[in-house]
Image (cartoon, rainbow, N blue to C red; front, side, top):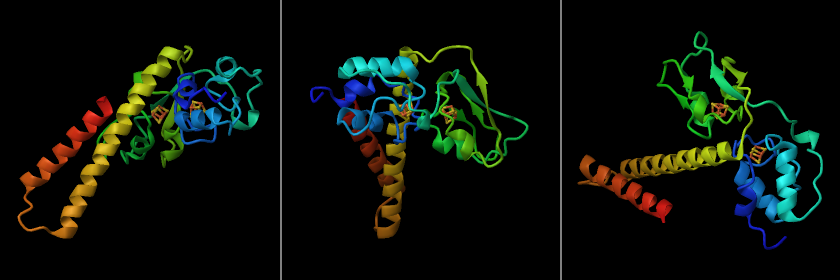
Length: 201
Ligand code: SF4
Ligand code: SF4
């Protein structure tokens, strides 16, 4: 068991980032499984097949999905009812794969190919404008690989956004003399370049 890394476990998880397992995402649940802190039967999107794969990896017997953490459901993607959307953008902030497009006070829409069906956008919408539509397809390991790439991309963009915002606030706080808009942009670009290099290394 000790030879199994969290990454080994994470590769077998569905990457919907739905949090039904009670963790902040697939990577956190993988960490807990690999360190023996959580059992293998809490991922409803992975279902019985996912539990089977985890059991094989860890060399333990499979067990049924714990109903306290959800149940297996047909795969469904989110759709925003155009007539109801008020353009608040709250759904955008919680979407783990940047699958929702729209600008403030305008209609928002789900890019279905990017949607993992995690359902985090539904409770975020203040007027219940999100519904779910079954696709009639299964969520496959290939879907999981794609979703992980989108999730990683969204996380990286979020980190860059936050770094730029911190820099902007810091420059305001210091009110540094001679800190021009051009200097500000140079700093942001340097941070972004540094992070890109780190992410690609
Ligand atoms: S897909 Fe499974 S492991 Fe990932 S967050 Fe959802 S329940 Fe947890
Ligand atoms: S659109 Fe909604 S259901 Fe689809 S990935 Fe984003 S938050 Fe999850």
